[in-house]
Amino acid sequence: MPSTAIREVREWILSRHEDRDAVSDDENLIESRLVDSLSFVELVYTIEAAAGVEIDFDAIDIKDFQTLSAIEKAFFAAA
Image (tube, rainbow, N blue to C red; front, top):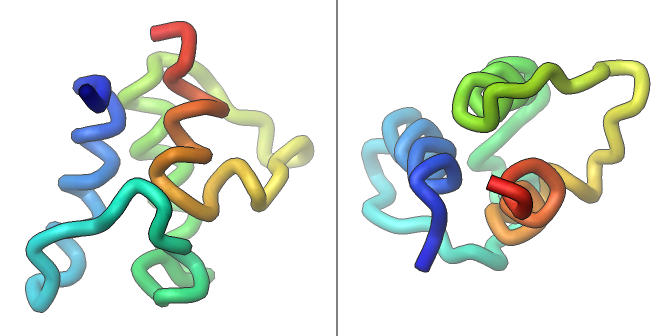
């Protein structure tokens, strides 16, 4: 079962795409344009708020943000 934190991230994505009612855990958020260059920073802030951690922008690995599964593993696995 997905964590509450990853559900918050999923809801944030869906709130910006009214034409969508679901996002699969393995859907590439960047390739599908669910997260673009303009919304990426906001995604990072959403993850920080949900995880209660600060993400170092200088150390970002884009692979950690490509799917909800990758986000959960990188930022919420210990939650």
